[in-house]
Length: 503
Image 1 (cartoon, one colour):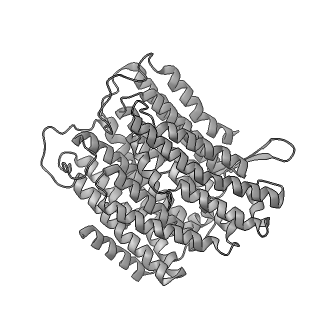
Image 2: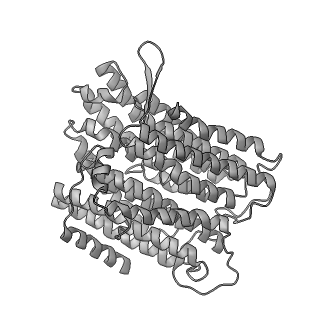
Image 3: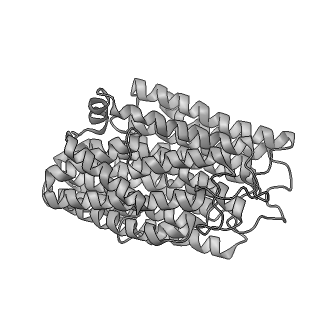
């Protein structure tokens, strides 16, 4: 029952939000400038109720996620004589049922505080999207996975095209939907191959599939995961998705849509490593994306698109870790990335509103917005992989496992880390570096600052990954080992991060 409630509570919240919305206010005639946000106070009773219901539903979902992770329930539903839908909170899905609502709650608060156009509709759609994502991560068979996978794609199309009167936004949403759906064909192929080999769609049967079915399953899974996580050659859809509102970008590109591909690889890689080419192919995809995305992020002039390139590159590092044999390192990176990337997207949204531009360097807001600047510095430090932040632990784990697998792969991981430091420092200095105290700058309201500070605290809190007991816990949840790093490797990584920041 707790597992079903986990999926139902966000949907119930979405329905209540839609019922509470004021009549005739869903799509306002006066809309903010394209790409901007408005830090308007929630001034009347009904919007306050809408915001409270949306955030409250997510906090209840978070509580249920913690309960589900602790109790590991299993639900089996019969769908005909041979097809059973299986839901289970096992392995790394126990992490995801907590991580998804934990990131969504502050992002929903930010959306409630900043969104002017169709606020109730946006909040309700985001709640439904979280429900679909939770279905995806608790799916224990390919049919259930495909239902969640398709729902996530469909609702993300609706979120990216939220301002449907803007034709460019609708086109961008359609590009995202079609590109990721090309990758979805891989999952259908994998599901069909598994059923042909074993007569079942259950994940447990993957290890039982013989040749050639195991290779078809592996290829389909890698193809679908690469598309969802914006790996080469699917990366361009991630830039189109930046047409959506800032809170949508923060949610989709941290712990949900883009994370679903990496989650799938982490979940199924231990069952597919018998396919000789699977792990090397995963490494190649990840390395190409980590380097290519890093290069793009260092020169991209658009704030959110630079973060999008960074997202693609960071998931490339997760693919490197899985391909090098450590789902634990990939899982740790997925957790830390969710916190610091959602933080950086929200900080970018504040800068866009304050300057009226989505381009770097128009106004440096460090002195005008010290709280956001400090929070953004924490996020950028975690992105760059600096200890004692959790991002430093996960980045060090990836470099260690890559170096153990191959000196060349270790060098590529270090190069990707160097580029990460370059674009992290570039984002921070050009957006929240020291600047003049401009009197015309619109200061963010407390409701806007609160989710940013919460995510900054979470990013700092993930520094607990450096504690000795963290590594065994991550290994157990992610179903794989973490290569122990050495002091020279750690110092080399820190040195490259500092050099990249100085550059």
